[in-house]
Image (tube, rainbow, N blue to C red):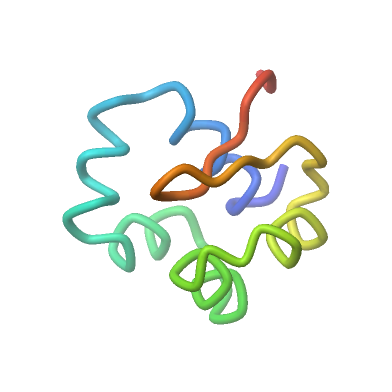
Length: 71
């Protein structure tokens, strides 16, 4: 599983991670091994690009981007 996909899944499940991401998104994305393009798409909240990059088709944006219904 890609780091981006795992990050999106984890952001939907882990409130502490979400809080950490809000405070320092680049650090969290670096820890997950996200590429520069993935970082840009996350910071831009570019849901279309994130869907394509992650392979997740149920991404939703609500003041951030996260994945629902994935384990």
